[in-house]
Amino acid sequence: MANEVIIQVNDSGLGRKYSLDGALNGTPNGGVVLGRASDADIQLLGGLISKRHARVYRADDRYFIEDLASRNGVTVNGVRITKPARLEPNDLFAIGDAAFLFAPDLEVLPMDGGDKAVIVTGGNESDPTRPGFGHVVPVPLAAAPTPVEAFLGKSADLKTLLSELLRFVEERIPFGAAGLMRAREQSFEPVCLASSARTVSLPKGLLRAALARDQLLYVPDAAADTSFAGAPQVGTPRSIVVAPLKAGSETTGLLFLHADRPRAYEAAHLDALAALVPSIAVVLGLWDRQQTLAATLERMQVLHATKTASAIVGDSPVWRELRALIAKVSAAPSPVLIQGESGTGKELVARELHAGSRSAGPAAPFVAINCGAIPEHLMESELFGYEKGAFTGAQKRTPGKLELAHGGTLFLDEIGDLPLALQVKLLRALQEKQFYRLGGAQPVSIDFRLLAATHRELRAMVGAGKFREDLFYRINVVNMTLPPLREHADDVPLLVDHFLAEVNADLHRRVRGVERTALAALCRYSWPGNVRELKNVIERAVVLLDGDVIRVSDLPAEILADHGLADAPADATLPRQLDALEKKLITSALKRARGKKVAAARALGISRPTLDKKIKDYAIDAFAAEEA
Image 1 (cartoon, rainbow, N blue to C red):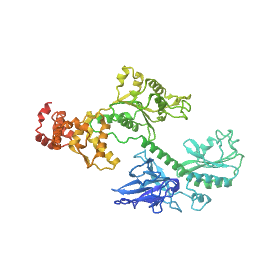
Image 2: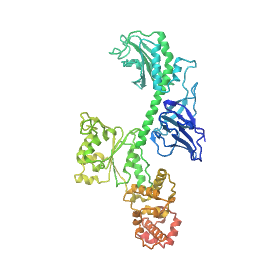
Image 3: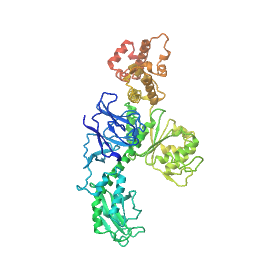
């Protein structure tokens, strides 16, 4: 294995790296322990960190992190873990108030005069939803010591450091105050720091000129200077100095000085400011990137909250067609109506459509509401939200689901259960792209993609006057009908493997698989509860299982009854019952395949020679199956 490391990425130890060479295999208590205890492998002195907080260990050439029953838990990419979680390159994990980057094979260049470094983030082309870490570079300070360098060792908090640097500027250059602005293309965002800089009106033309010319600009008397648009404004200071701040080749912001009297600054003041600009630019750039990292973590949390627990599983012709339709429709903003029986995976398809939408980035919300699960008198406030005092108990303004879905996707599950009175209000909101909260007087604008689902036949409800025709046509731009599991039973073996892997991981079990006869019984069952029922059956079997293979006897009574086993004679031995079931399953498979043995063997999950042998052993008439 390569020398793998973790690097601290928050203020308390920015850039400090720790080796994971001690995270060895084979011992229950092995690995690298992180915590406040003096005997911890990596000692961390944060206020929210337990004595033995977490453990990082290596198993099968992969790294995992485990929460050691700490008070404040462990999060990986913003999500709290409840069991050991595998660490992937560039994963971010937090232990109390310490945050780390898992960075295998990453070269760390130390800062001059210390053991810390600066993390520089970059994009990840292969997966734009994850933060990328391109390289690590030292802070480019002047070789000779300066008063500014002394600040770098005093404060680990970059925002506090910026504030101290501004105060230092004000002490060196009198008659005014200093401030910072972050550059955002053609806009300027003030940086709120605890400094003496009051809110001032600076000429926008001067700010743009400083960025365009990439040089320090000085206006001795802004009130008398008409060179810059917007100069003669009320509140504009008389003397203004603006200096671009660059971190490498990127301009991150502007440093400005202002004084109320004209010609307040002399050449010596400007020279002193120019000498301080590079150090302030570096610190602002680091703080800016730290803010970017925090925003990335927040987006990843939203992404985790909106992504599905599992991908669509299935390789039958009907699911291949459905997957192709999802890929074609997901990029368009058109509303989609998803119909199908309960448990067929309507919300899963909706999340796939959201994830593939061009307009829905990684932080775009996916807001789902079940129209049949909320009482009618509460449904309106759930959809539209309400203002403070709109009704008894409305103690503060609360946004509704329509408002929360702005910029993303709104999924109305079981829309057929939506009351007629609310159907009218929903239609109006969709048409006008705005609505009023309950008790509100100001309209709220909305822009989202609408996805709806139902197990009901909406066309019949329209004819019966139970669903509005205009709303039906509004939501039924693209229609998807999901087949029940009994119509694509060929996918049952794939689904069984998928759910078995999920349940094994969740319950820390090692069930190897399903016995052939039991799998055939699962394939033959009619599944009134569809995929959801299948998942529950697998989970139940694993929970109650004593061995490592699911057998016929581990299946629920309703599945056995569906194959006649529940009505077997009391004196019938288990081998006789299993033989009878296997004969019945083979006969049924041959009938469904119209006597084609290759297709029947594939459906049963056995080879063609094995099928031929069983046909001979059970004296099954394959020709009769072909005629049927």
